[in-house]
Image 1 (tube, rainbow, N blue to C red):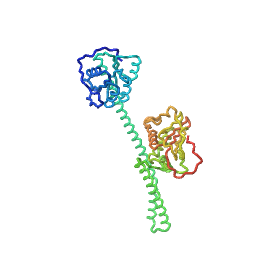
Image 2 (cartoon, one colour):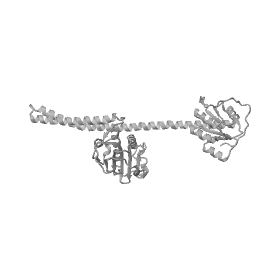
Image 3 (cartoon, rainbow, N blue to C red):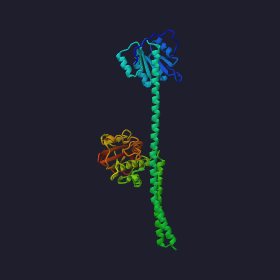
Image 4 (spheres, rainbow, N blue to C red):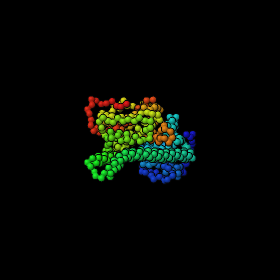
Length: 445
């Protein structure tokens, strides 16, 4: 804040008439726009005469006129008198900053008090000038306020550019990670098909040899060849089914009414996991649904979500440990009051969860070291990882979170030091066969 200043305005300053209608005024580039609010016409015109050569100046005689002008024009700096009819200058400034938070202000008044000064400080007033004042003081105060405004705008612009760059970088890395997982799915499809193709090739070779070696085919030869052909046809059908199912899932990722059978999903996941390099020193088991159901989500997204959770469980410890997947059907909405964040629990997407039965709960459980409480709140942050450098991207669980949100599901993480960790995903489902139950089941821990 500057100290009290003195001045008398010269009568020789230009006193042009200026309209106060709330019409947008085209600003001149680089000059900045001032809003001068004073209930004395002479004071308004005098201030305009001092500042009009350097800035575009709007004049208002009261708070309503000032607010109209501020709504119609982008105001950079406001020059305000404290005492206005119906509303004080500082009350007006409060309203003006609601319209344009980056607006700076210079307060000009013949009356000041400690309460006024404190209020002005709270509103981050750039300068406080008492009447009468010198022209040079007013110009310096307005120039300083304009510089602060331009600096704040440049800072915000830079922050916005940085934020966009970071988002683009994160999005690119996320796409790379998701593409890497999709490539794993493609690789798993190829691996899944290679087994049946090997059987087809072997059986075709045996049948061909039987035909070639026999000068005349007898009944036993024909029966043998028929049996080989039936096996070949069955294995070929398996290849076609597997490739169509998952390549179709990947192509139809954006379809809203996608569905995938839970038990088929778990069976495919089990085959994919068999060749995953992270499975070393891990005992892996799967408990499918007793009565099958279908998830209301794309199959490629579902397999990617579960694959990331399982790989995360595989990598929880380099020592030998166990990882289990258990699926269960929940016919009734969950009581979310018993599922809350705590030192051993973390909930995700409670607000976006479609908590309507039926639901499928898929729990991925390990008996590793567990997650320390100080890390539990960070595990879904992009790029957060406890793995050594170059051994993890820190995006696996962040992708899981995105996929769960996209499916309108919910994720509950429960961990206990030395006993392991359980990631339970609750997803909207469609029952295929439902047995009557006496009441709603308790939510899985």
